[in-house]
Length: 328
Image 1: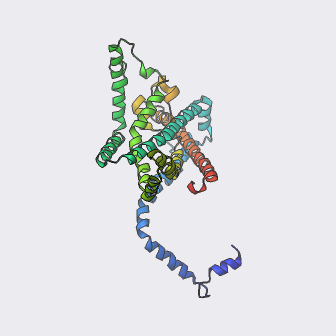
Image 2: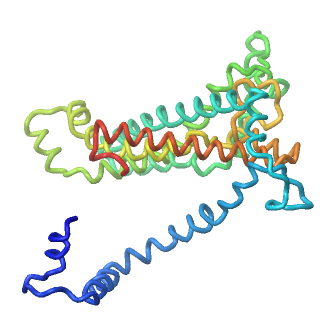
Image 3: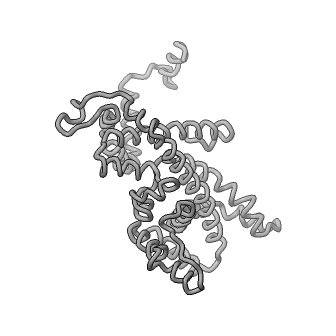
């Protein structure tokens, strides 16, 4: 801003200069007018302050060889040795690939299914059936991961599982599910989709409810059938919501669902490491088995930085092709 522009902006409609306290009074007035919104933001601000910003000095753990006697800030500084250990052992690449592959499947397939479910719910005309369908689809989200793991074990167990009992009754050989790493990616993805699709469709269904009914009525008058309404009206309307949820999800692309993986297969089943070991299960073993807090912190820091870069890159691409839908 030039000096002339700044002088002009400081002059009111009456041609007189504004007093400095006038801007302060205006700012206070805006705060008072929006006090309800500010009060609603306070819990979120406190949440991120306490759980995201205050613990940040703990990142120093990733660069030291931690011991209990000296504590965090007196333990010997080792630089990037903890990261070198991960690279040299080859664990970093396997963990990164597995975690990204699972999360991409969760994000892409999950969002597509959620959109499909939301669209189908919107097309249902009987309110009682719609409410019953919503209740049944939301139910898996509230089932504990521990219970899901127990159900999976009772189905897939080699000796007593339902699957092998059915196979033996048909004269077929038993399947060693917990020793075959090739089938678990399908089991994990299907279990995750079963648990989250119904609940995740709420956001898309709410977005559809915000669609102007006059647009739908006008399309019906013009002769558009249900498929055409979905294709040319509903899906374009859901595009901004899909992009925002996609960007939010990409921020955690290296943050696996520890509860699901741990309860389905455990953290110490070495036969399944090739396809089921993710960053969270590795960090768990580093902390609980080897008591190696420093390497666990190094992995977590790598996880956060990778997600940060992915979000910035994805937002840059969205801003390039669809600026109105970018986060910033």
